[in-house]
Each structure stands twice: as C-alpha cells, then as structure tokens.
Image (cartoon, rainbow over all chains, first blue to last red; front, side):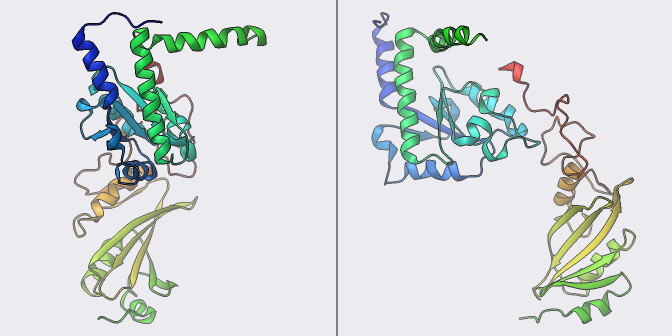
Length: 175
Length: 159
C-alpha cells in the first residue's frame, strides 16, 4: 500500500522520528535487573546513542515508553499518568517476564496481572531480564511498527490483522 | 572499641523487664510485656549503650503478633526486645516519641498487620496504595485475596 499524501513538514517530522527515537524509562515496581540492563545499553559496549536512541528524563520529550517490571497497585495510576503525558504517536515496550504476566510476582496481593491492564503495549521484550541486544531489537521493532502505522494511518490495522487471522481459526475450532 | 555485651550482663541488668536468652552469638532477645516495653527500650538506650534502631520486625505466629525491636550500639550486640500483642485487640504504645525512626516502621506494620500504635502522630498509609480497603491486612496469616473485592489501582475495564 502506498503512503498517503503528506505535506513536507509532516514527512520531515516522520523521517526525523524514525532516525532518532527518544525513550523514557518507567520502573513500575521491578526488581532493578531490567533497569541495570538498560543502563548497560547506554554504556560504551552497546552504546545505543550511536543509533540515535536517546534516553530522556521527561515523558513529555519521549516517543517510546519502556516499562520495566510488573505494575504494583500503587504505581498503576502513576504509570497511566506518565503514559498520558507522552505526545502522539507513542509506543510502549513492556520489558521482561514481569511486563507480560507479572513473572515471579504473579498472584501477589499488590500486583496487577499485566502491563496491558493499565496501558496498551506495542512490543514485549522477552527475558528475565532481557539482554541489551533484545532491548535494542524491541526499539527497532517499534520503529518498524511506526513506519507501518504511518502507511496505514493509525494503529487500528494491527487489531484488524489479528482478527483476520484469528477468526477463521476460531471458526474451525468451533469457539 | 567497646567490647560486646554478654548474656549474663544483659540478663542481670534487664531482669525487671523479663527473661533474656542468646539467639545467636551477638544477638540477645528479651521477652517482655506490652506494659513494660516502653521502659525496657528506654533502659536499653540509656544504660546498655544502644544508640540506634535496626528495625522492628513482626511475626504472625497464629496466636499472637510478636513485635521485635532490634537495637544496636557501638558494642555491636543486637538487643531484640520481644513483645506479644493479642490478635483480638492489636494495640500497643508507639515508640516514635523516644525513638524517632521507629515511626516509619510502625506505619508499615500498621499497613500490613493492622496493629494500632497509640500516640503515633500520623498513622497513614505508607506502603500500600491509597485506595486499599481499610480492613484488609495482607501479611496476616488468615488473610486471603478475595476475587470480588476491589483492591485499588486501576480498573481493567478502563483500558
């Protein structure tokens, strides 16, 4: 599908956004291992700044939010508030086993089940904790999604695609 | 350097507050009652040379709540003052007046076990979320998570 016609300034902004994604971190109750892996990303061995990925302190400056860890009940409303401050188009990476299913903390009294219960997640980085190369891979996956979303004009096409794949399978299984 | 305290010395000094026993080589536990705990801690601070509070730990042993005030000083011997609080009326005097750092531990114990500390200047929530139901205490042994109760955080339908 061809990209819809956009004005020059819009094309310039999109080009710049893909060349230099700014990320912000949010520790929603993690054990700190994920945060250490992100610090390793910033250090000279992996050095994500050479790809233009820049860690920012404020969510208002960021394009991508990285949520490390499970979401405690106390952090849930704070996480939602941080996510609301990020300007569109915003993307969320949930890190590790905790982001997907609360991991080792699943079923505890003060823990939400998944990050997806609080904010919509675009990419999951697998591992406990994920290695720095997996974090870089997650950010690059996010950028590919960003490119495709620009072609399709929004994020809705992804849910449509999932429905197109799932519905015949469910019909076959008789669900 | 101050030499470590011996069990005999502490047992003789703290005789009026209760029995003492040696838990580990550098850890002496004194079993006392809720009425005498304030005086026992004051005595340990003034006479035994303890000058700081390590932590207050709480045990739910099924019958009572056991509070342990761990005090330490330059002699590097931990004096643990143990008190048993009844489960029906979990209520004890606050130590935040004579030991200011005790206040923050007492707020945490109030959150998780529901023990009330008399005379504490502000027993508000510290570790649980603000909209946690008021009569649920998650670290009690008889507590179970109720699937119908809303424990705060964010409702899933809101996403």
